[in-house]
Image (cartoon, rainbow, N blue to C red; front, side):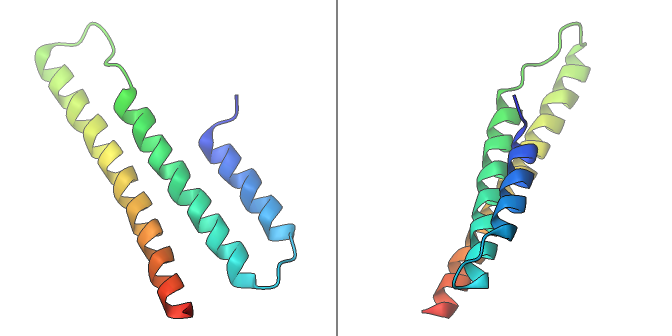
Length: 92
C-alpha cells in the first residue's frame, strides 16, 4: 500500500501535467492535498502504539516525541490550509 507521501507525490506529478485555465488552481489543489496528507499523517502518528519493553521513563519520552511529531504535522497542515483560505480571500 502506498504511503501518503507517495500518493501526494503522484498527485503533484499528475496535477503539474494537467492544463487548467488558471495555474493557481493547480497550486491550490496541490496545497490542499499536502495539507490533507499531513493531517492524515498526524492521525497515523497519534494511533501508533508504544513499543513493548520500555521502561516508564522511556515510554514517557516516546509518548512526548510521538505527541510532538503529531503536533508538528497537524500545525503544518493547519498552516497550509490557512494559506489556502488567505489566498482564496485575496482572489475574491
